[in-house]
Length: 480
Image (cartoon, rainbow, N blue to C red):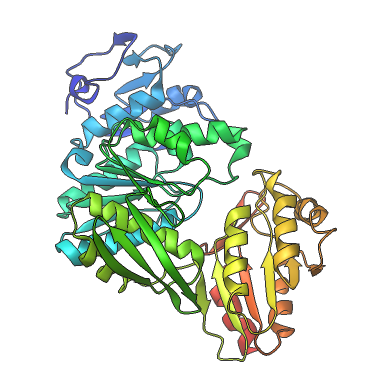
């Protein structure tokens, strides 16, 4: 593809390269640059791609897309915003694959992974279409699973993955859309058929600084969506409604003015059931994932599918066949007289949700093992400590992904919030040992919650990513 075609629609300040240069690849990593490649110099928060232009050219890059002209010259194109330019250039290079898929985007603090998986399952069952998935714990092309490094890949990885979906015959793609992806223009070249908002609670304030800025980033999804689905029960629903310039479909468990409501909600250890009024039709919805949050997840998925044109009763029936997602209220089979649940809860709201869910059916104590991630929002740590102390009977405070912070400093932030609560707690820095202590001291009827890691099979200590799968750890401990 010619450079001029790759940069079609990209706003340029100066164009000092031959537009007829043949481009055979695109990258923002100078180490991956080869002959025929366009290297995009992006200013990141940890490093600046402009510092690696010389390296990219040395490795064979045929042209550079950047925000300031390189000192060494060479074929280059200057743009005001290389992140935005990267998104457009990547879309062009891979043949604008998003335009050939029905794109569904789900944003919000909690529930995105479960909701996207539910939507994928319902579409597949009700339409027979092949559906792609892009999410926190996995990417899928139909039934083929691909590893996922982050919630929303960067623009180049994203367009390459979407192109693979198109080539494989996918008709839809359901993806989690993070606030980072929206703020950093990773999805700016995509037009979503439906954009859905689940909820907004404290998270990522190390990046966004304020809840308003966090909400504003999330709301950007509705500027690139043809239809919006919004949770009316969330305190930020009005904020989202004001910014949605497209047709909006709403859902609620509390407000009768929503387009779809959930009434007569029944919770059990096996899942949830509720009746829903859609237009003038009453349908029964079941989902085999316990917890009040499952009612909201089911409503979000049901709403999206209705907006896509799937008949409500058929969508509800398909939801009843859906299974849980790895690391989301995942029950680990212990074969003993106590239970273990693995959950990704790493925000105050998510931790409260899983604790309240388990408290609703636990016959014995609710025992919690959790920590907080390092180099991330510090303000939520004491809040999560308070929630743990109020809703659990016994807490093992331990490490999560400490990254470059000292684990005991993070633990100190958590326990500061536990001091005025009633729960007994114990600090065990080593996560494996904390899990072992919880299992060893479990009593009949207890439910142990391992919170924070969920689907992750690693721990990040310092800058090293170490293998750590809680399912394997549990199997080893139980065998001992």
